[in-house]
Length: 232
Image (cartoon, rainbow, N blue to C red; front, side, top):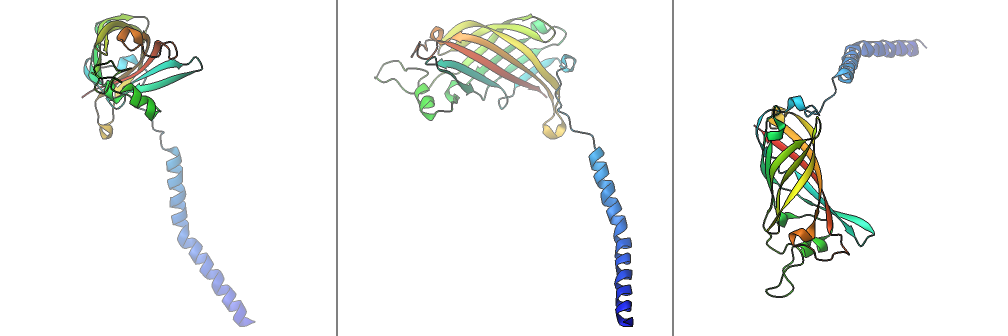
């Protein structure tokens, strides 16, 4: 009995000692969790605040500038694809936004769709030697858009008119543009001033010599543009 009591007491003292030894560690761990919980949340560097736009010449960000095109397919559903890897420049002064100008180049040969068959058809060579391809053909020229006028419509909206050259044909097009955000990129993310816009417009593909399949595939093409520019 005495031996049992002695062992119980020993184990009890060991447990107390262990608890006392780990108490500072547990307290420190709890403090760390509290500090972590109280850490300020991260915020996106860009804000929908036009006062953050810096004057200068910006370069298009080819990784984040996209043109989405959408057509009607057989009257049953819409179908869309993308142009990316877009390059160009934006000149802007927030004190005189109506004097802004933009010029971009769109590599048609890099058109992207969800259908390998459709992508191949868009870039297919003519069915007959010396004939005309249904769409862009295997070596299409880049498309370009060069602005000619900017008309403000509100605090963050404007109509941007310019010349769109596609498939070797140039037509005037007006984009309904809207300021999306601006700000400074953190150094660890490359740094520099950034500004972005979104825009929409409609064109007729037959105006650019791309009328194959009308009306089974709609002549009207809706364009939705996400434009990101950076200045370092």
